[in-house]
Length: 286
Ligand code: NAP
Image 1 (cartoon, rainbow, N blue to C red):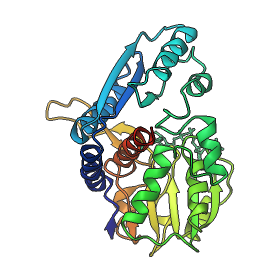
Image 2: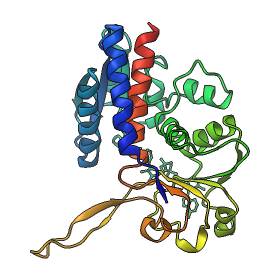
Image 3: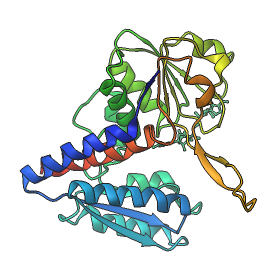
């Protein structure tokens, strides 16, 4: 089995980006807006800060109150949109329920939207317009497959999950690479059969253990984008712990398929690497 090691590739991409930044003489700046203090977000932001440091980019972390009025948040984003010293802006998701997520995403300038979530950038993925910022998680999935020499052209690719954040753009990028693409979702009948007949399976659902050994076969390539916090082993003091797993029952599937990405260490670090690739790209465009 080939392990699609996103953590390793994340490091290799960092080395390349560091060199690119040194050669350009431009130090890109990423602004991360965090609304409230969600522990899960703190961990993701720590990763982004340390990646920025590693490649020589500035990361400015702006923490706003969880009950911030929407207009105030949008004003802050506008301030950053107009700040020529800021190259990229991300709003760390999830944000508080009282805020309209789409409205907030749409208020980030598409030129600084390094997550690639703005409808203009999303739209460009669907129209094969390469001038947009490619959504970070989907871009990371494709980079991971390509890095490990997985042939996409002509293959039957299945994307499970149809969100605008992951499923749909991943499907469009696979299509661009020449795959024959199927998108499965919660209403899909006989998911097992649909999975079995696919060569490449990208799973982005958010349900631990969705893909089991009965659903896969030899020769398949699986990228697990799902992240689920489940109960881990108890400590010696019988204290319950949590651990991160994907949507695929990795331990039982890994010895059957040709290649698989782990969780953690697969799509997650690739998202971070792709985000910074986008940051460097938009910074050098200026
Ligand atoms: P989402 O918006 O909740 O979408 C989940 C999708 O899964 C929906 O399209 C849903 O179908 C489908 N689904 C639900 N139950 C299903 C089932 N039993 N069989 C088949 N499809 C099913 O989630 P998301 O934002 O796309 O994220 C998906 C997962 O990826 C989450 O675990 C998230 O944490 C993770 N994620 C990871 C990264 C990373 O960097 N690693 C980045 C983004 C997201 P319907 O549309 O029919 O409801």
